[in-house]
Image (cartoon, rainbow, N blue to C red; front, side, top):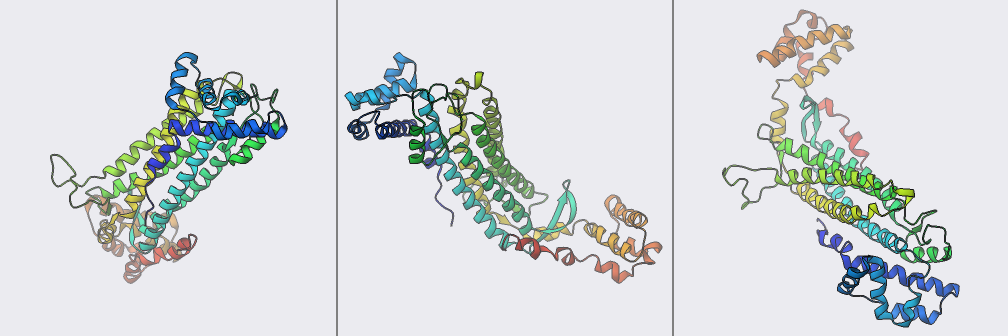
Amino acid sequence: MIERYTREEIGRIWDERHEFESMLEVEILACEAQAELGNIPKEAAKAIREKADFKVERIHEIEKETNHDIISFVTAVGEFVGDEAKYIHMGLTSTDVKDTALGIMMKKSCDILLKDLHTFHDVLRRRAKEFKYTPMVGRTHGIHGEPTTFGLKLCLWMAEIERDIERLERAKQTVAVGKLSGAVGTYSVVDPFVEQYVCDKLGLTPVKVATQVVQRDRHAELLSTIAIIGSTLDKIALEIRHLQRTEVREAEEYFSPKQKGSSAMPHKRNPITCERICGLARVLRGNAQAALEDVALWHERDISHSSVERIILPDSTITLDYMLSLATKVIDKLLVYPDTMMANMQRTGGLIFSQRVLTSLVEKGAVRDQAYRWVQKYAMERWLEGKDFAKGLKSDINIGKYLTPEEIDACFDYKPLLKHVDTIMARFGL
């Protein structure tokens, strides 16, 4: 059963109020750490924990005067706290709070995306098992090659999703970091204990070194990973679009009884969901490029990245969450037509067995290059003139020296070509 769609859940992570809540928790924990060090009264830290709050509208009101979001945030919180507010933000710079809160938000987003990926993987696995032995033609360069199975195609996608899960796990570790080291990262007026204390409480890793900001190669890794995952979904969706083409129609998106495919043509059944996935993958790749542009900052620190990240981080994580939900639903309800797959496999009149004929000739002692030319002659006659491929092979004097008509007929059986399906599927526990 597919898990509940989580787009609203991931959207709340990037909600403005949640971002301020995350920053507030960083500020409160920093005060508690300062109290542990004896730099501020423990009673003050306790009061800050109990009274600290804010109103988003008030932050915006103050920002109209200060033109500084973090100062406005700290000021608005101070109005709730009272006298003890003088200890809030002590020794910190704005991006100590902003970047550490961002680490929380990116980590939470990765957790949801990883859950999405595991759900998608489970659906792919179930359907791969279902179609483990369903034969279909394997295409190379878009042209019929040799037989494969639809289960193996699904396993191919599943394997890539497994790599995507590994990539996102690594990227999550890369971005799940915090930094509270002051104006230029030297801990000039804040003890390193504060950073360690806050990060431990938040489940983050302190960065080994920073300037005023956490370096943006980390964020670029996450956005690049998201783009790669999007490209995986793009690949899957594009293949389904190909399979749904009228001339192929081996599989197609589920089409509900009341659904309409065209405003003009009542017969249409269009792969609109897969087209949507393909389109959104382009957005993710574009956002990844923007993240790469954010890596280079003046003297390793300016805020040219900030305005970009306010768009690309929420947009990319929310978009990928949405795309994974769409892809999961597509595979879960994908309509598959084994009879059409078999019919398409037979469309070329046995040309897909040309390698088997070639191999059989070589095994019987024929020179490979000569045998290739013999088989190719009759394959081209089939392609260009529609002649009977098997009949042509049987009529050839050279081929007849090595293979009997019965041996040639035996080459036109797809089952031996799929003898290792179990071996491949066993690698996935199927």
